[in-house]
Length: 257
Image (tube, rainbow, N blue to C red; front, side):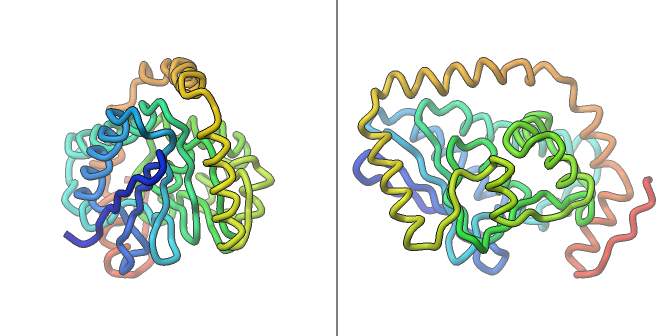
């Protein structure tokens, strides 16, 4: 397997580190499976007070590894893939402890979804945020992902991000309210340490209640019909063209078919 997911627990804080340096920490299907397992482990450990998500080697996460998307050739396979993504994301959302994403470099695709599902996002000035799939791959996002991006970036900024495939700078993400703070690497670690100390000093059941109530606010999204949209997108010629063009390192030619 190319890519790995590191896991460590120290002083009540679990840290998950994405590593796939050849592909800017693109997340393979095996890595997604490991993430789902680790989120479950965090949920079962009463000693864990917070979860930190981060990437290795100068990137947070460069989206889903496109090699797996090449295997999706029918609408049904696209629906199954999105169901897998929903399980992983639901395992993260289902945690009762605060989630902090520490971003350095690219935070795109699946990476920006994880950041959007986090409670606090810290980043370096070189970080970039976006979901450029309309220009690159030609697939889509889940209703939950679109709603979280709209909520955390604001509807207008999220629309620009998705409809133009533009990447946002760290300062733009800060102004939009998606990012909690921007700082250089050393200062960022100090900021993270301060946040984690503050979390440890709070009542665990109170923090859990905030997460649980936010989940109930979001619960209505689960009733939105989505599989027909997924099937149409993943069965399209444009999606197949986007994947092949990405792997061939050429610009895709989308025809709306």
